[in-house]
Length: 94
Image 1 (cartoon, rainbow, N blue to C red):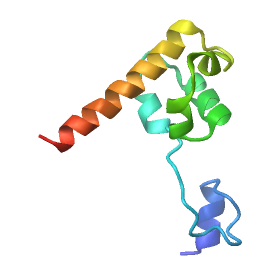
Image 2 (cartoon, rainbow, N blue to C red):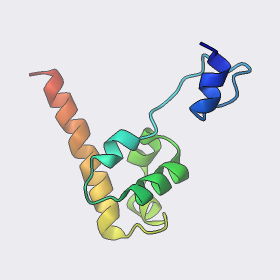
Image 3 (cartoon, rainbow, N blue to C red):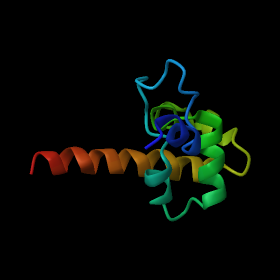
């Protein structure tokens, strides 16, 4: 397996010195689980914020600044992600 080629295919940073760099999830899987958020908006959110932690820490105004996202969709994103995180925490302790 050619690691630099895999890195390039995944669209990750150039493999010079960053093969062991810390990575954060971008949020595609969780955002796609929100039925009220169409794929085009998922793509715009990830493009704008870059990582799931950044999306989750975004304010309502920051979410609404993404093209196509209004107050209702911003609330769906924030509340939906918060519920998924909460559910995963509860699952760990069951």
